[in-house]
Length: 391
Image 1 (cartoon, rainbow, N blue to C red):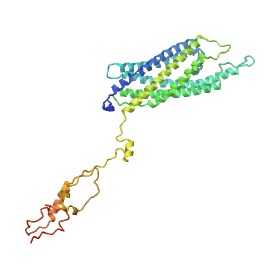
Image 2 (cartoon, rainbow, N blue to C red):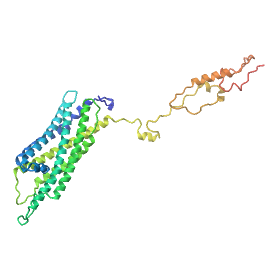
Image 3 (cartoon, one colour):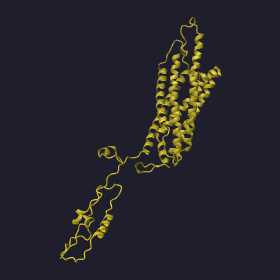
Image 4 (cartoon, helix red, strand yellow):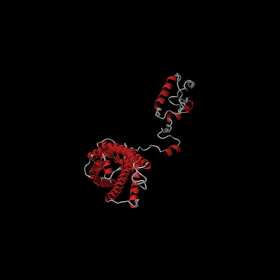
């Protein structure tokens, strides 16, 4: 189990994950995902019965014929609804397990989250390919309609003609939505795998967090813009003399507003959770510096450098002798800081040299000899000394 020394108090992966996923923001994410799931299911039913075409699925309509519009809408709507249900179930399982009294977090919820993220990425790639193919189909169908158009019978061009400007607008939208959606999905797969492994005892990691953060920021910006555009079209519609307001179109517009509002709430909750999770991981692996930069700059010492040791105390036995001035000062330079000072072996060597070099006098010494003469002379003074003559 991973442990953190934050505040000198150890924490395990279990306590960290349970505390993080028991937040109110996780509950907000779960509720917003539930609203999004219900809205998508209702939208699927409405488009299935009304038979209204979706521009992103025009390529599928063209392959299977115009009679397959309702079936195609129901199939794709059901797939998207199932993915939303999987995400809702995984978030709900993780939150309930974190709020429970069990010590271990929910491995089942994280496994379901990984499966949901992988399914989401695959579905986004398939729908994105069909959306790009639908642009060419719509341009071809509009070109065929313009060939059959007779200006003598119609005073103006029909409003449902798919022009080049519409194709460029849809192409840019698909590029933006697809890029951020794929980044969001790949980041969710990697991060959910990392959290699942952390719940099973491995160190906590933030793999895929940057991709999830970028995807969340871009997606929430696009969904918010689309929400306001759809809301403006509902409040201030483009009416003409032959406009007919059908109940199915009105209900679809209302459901689109709810879907984009719920999707914005889900993405914002993901962005909030990811940012806080990144802060949590950075605090866990933050290593305190031994010496701050400003302190090392003020003292002109590099951080973590070896500080010089104080000078060793002088030898009282040597300095007290009057012959201390004649001692040759060897090795005046300071010894390395890594080696301790040791003066005891030095004294022993001096005493040994003095005993060996001192001349032996056969003349008896006088009793008036200076009592201050040391018993052992330092090295280097015995050669110059003469035997005392008391005669």
